[in-house]
Image (cartoon, rainbow, N blue to C red; front, side):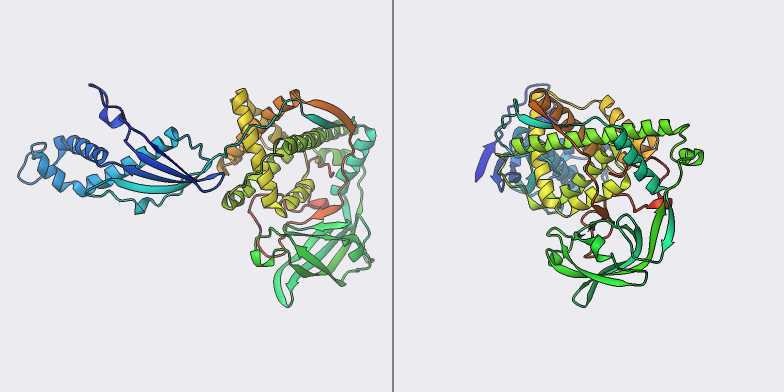
Length: 497
């Protein structure tokens, strides 16, 4: 499908700056897909000549030519002598002005930088200057009905039993690891060497990984069920094998969906001896004066996680309702680029809500294994929420950023200044902005929804996540926590949920 539009500039009145006069562009726009446009632009000769005349006029007072005093050389000679330099200058100026004018007048709403080969654009001696570029734009769609949605809202009061379990998990992180000669049981820690083979071809390997024995083992691009049963009889020095299926969105395309062999050699089995909640342990966990002060901090952290689960479940229901009619496709290249951003956004949200490193690793590994599908859902939801935000006048403020950064800093143990500097250095402030706008918009949607409260149970982890890619390459290189078990864990309350 192709749409054409021609922008006709009005005549310049006396005293008006001629440089600011709009170009008389001829523009044709081809809709390649829902979010992709191919734009062809033609700048007429009269605009080129006008800009050339203006550039010569600006140069005349200072032009130096042999045999003439500064500013005294004839216009014709100045134009001829400096034509090449002026042509490059005019080409760049016209190109920038035309790109801005096209974007504004055609209301393209770009979501990425234009894809244009600037070096291939030339300023002709005769005739119009033409060029084309590709650009990704926000999709056009009908606003779904978002008021009066029926939503189930998970509800729970964090009690003493929840705090007791969380405290047990925290003490596990600070436990003393004691070597064990026998096979491991659920909850033990194994130190293992891993090798992954496609037939006889070695895909990847990793030495002395620390893995908690749980029913499932999660990798960056695969998962293994029945891990606890696999190592149940594996003493130190024993090698066991299992078939692992690589995810359909792994970084190495040729290996996607393929079943490969995992060889796991147990180097050591360790059992955990829980420490007493002594004054020294309280100090190590964050300088708590008493066990009650620690319990109160853990309860607050659990309440933050409960709020994250509540927001997530409500958001999933809202997203499902809002995107039910969003059948439009998104460009594969856009999904690939944004998949890393989606991981980064998820990590920021989890950190803000007080989740420990183990929980974040598990969540990130799950996202990595279905990166494109989850990114497509998240992007469609984002575009719809953004449209609602514009209609409702929802915007971000400086106070919003301060609040988000303070929340992240409180969980990471760093100062808000350091957190802000890290986000800015990694180019994540736009991710934070989207998070703020989406959260504020969801709050408006929720205020207009009809809620039914339902009981909530904290999920118990059935998997241990390791930061390793079976196929040897990872989708995205975002910064996620390294594995930290027992005595190597960070000295701050970490609630393993």
